[in-house]
Amino acid sequence: MRVAVVEAEPHGQGSAALGLSHPGLRATHRNEQVTPLNQCTICSEGFASFAAFDDHIVSVPSDPSFECLGVEQMHEAGWIQNVRARWMSPRTATDAARVQQRYLREAA
Image (cartoon, rainbow, N blue to C red; front, side, top):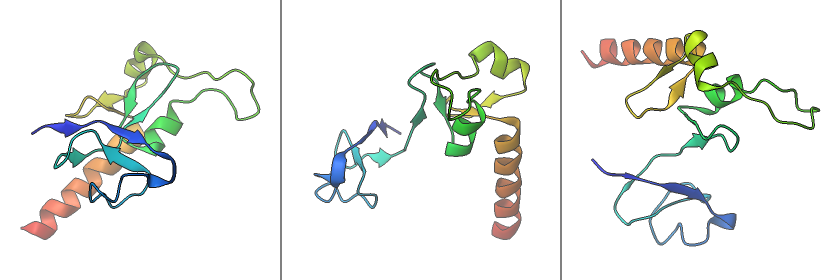
């Protein structure tokens, strides 16, 4: 499976032509699966969700310098990477496992 790189696009220009449901996202190639990436511009790491991205931020909103957890710090704190190599905090990994188990029970 090929995964498209997703980029933010002001006012969704061009997204309707690609048939995307979210006006702010577009794929780099037609007919590719759109997979949003929550990537930090400071550490360049990708996160599986907005919640995981928020969990890796160390600084407070009023702090003029943006600080985030590094890879070693995330490993030490029990963070894991999913099959797409995107970081999940212990909290978001637990939530994802709970949802997956519920889905598997309901599907059976």
